[in-house]
Every structure is written in structure tokens, then in C-alpha cells.
Image (cartoon, rainbow, N blue to C red; front, top):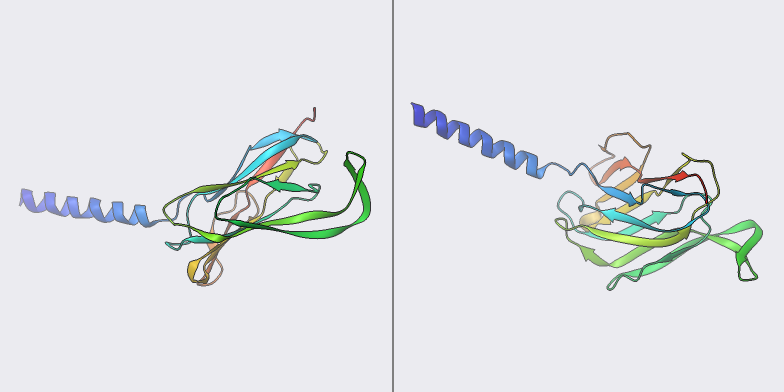
Length: 182
């Protein structure tokens, strides 16, 4: 009887471990740094911590917060990078005597595969906008995976992940908060 109890307890513990291991990770798309001075130049990194329910990630789209006008992606071998731009209402100074007439609104990495069990980082060099300390800058991120699955990291901070149909999950957007400018 005692051995039967031990076997039952071992089976229950194993089942619980398998269930916990197959549950989605609690951190999904993360931005670093968590805070930075308003108006400063920063390396901003979006970390993707897992795939989509077992499927490999094959595309990352990062939507730049309002006020960020341009971005330079860090070289990432094997990934192609493209930009989606929008025209500005009025040209703005871009430094070095140049004017900027459009802003980058999305940076898109594609053409490679990130296995579900690995993480990776997608980095940008940006100039943060002027603003008051505590202002949140959400870096909305869309993670597309094999089989048409996707994660949309676009919900308000503090919300829980949830499903939008069979192939789309939604979770909170990674956020950088401005601190007092330099």
C-alpha cells in the first residue's frame, strides 16, 4: 500500500511538472532598458522569450512609439530588415543640417527562424522623445510564427495574456518609461 501511494504521488508530481512546463512563459516580449532619460539616445532591445505555442518565430514587427522619428536596427545575421514610414505633417530638424520629412513607424525583421525553445533580442538605436518623467512608451510588438500563429504584444500594461481565436494570442506591450531628461 505504501509503495502504491508513492507511485501515485510520483505520477501526480510528474503530471504537474509536465503541465507547468507546457504552460506559456510569464515573460514574453520584454523591452530593455525599462526606463531612460527623455530626449536621450538609447539602445532599445526587444527580447522575444519564446515562440507561439511550440511554433518557431519567423517575423518580428516593432511599432515605434509616437515621438520616436527614426531608428537604426542592430545588424542581425540571417534576418532581413525593412521599415514602414509615414510622412510628417511638417519637416523637422534631423541634425547635421538635414531635415526629416517622414518618420519610421515600424521596423520589421523577417526571413529567419527562431525556435520556440530559444530566445533572441532585436535591438534599435533611437532618440527618445522629450517628455515628462513617468511617460510610458509602448513598443507594440507582433511576433509571427510558423503555421500562421502569432502573438500580439499590444495590450495595456498589467493585462493578462489571452486568446483571440485559434491562431492569435494577445499580451501586454513592452514599455519603456521616460525619466527626467539630461
